[in-house]
Image: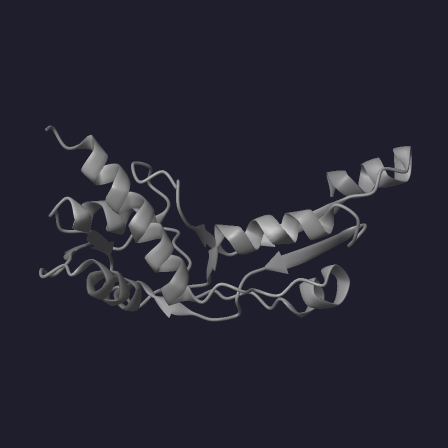
Length: 163
C-alpha cells in the first residue's frame, strides 16, 4: 500500500474511504458509470434506459451528501485506516429502475443488453467501522436520494429544451 509507505517514511497519516455506488445531483449522466444519473436523464427525456444483463445484479447505492459528510469526518479521524462508506443494503438494477420509474412517472420498460464482462454481480459495504471511527452513519434513504437526484435532473433537462 503506497499510503502505508508514506506514513512510515514521512509520518503522514491517511484515511482511505472506500465508497459504494455514489449517486446524486450533478452526477454526469453521459459517462459509462453512474446508473442513477443515466437512467434519470434517459427517462426524463423519454428514452429507454439500458440495463446490462438480467438487472438482478445488486449494488450498494450511497447518496453523495452522505459521502461528503464521511469525508468531512475523516479530516480529523480514522487515521491510517481503510473505511467503507456505504449503506450495507443491496439494491438490484431492476429495483432501481422501478423506483425511478415511479418517481418520474415513466411508462415504458427498459432495454436489456448483454451483461458487461467484469461487472461485480453483488456488492454491499459494511459501514460499522465508519460509525465507530468517524462517527458516520448513512442518513439519506435511497428513495429520498433518488427524489433529490431526479429533481436536479428534471430542472437541467427542462432548462436544456429549446424554447
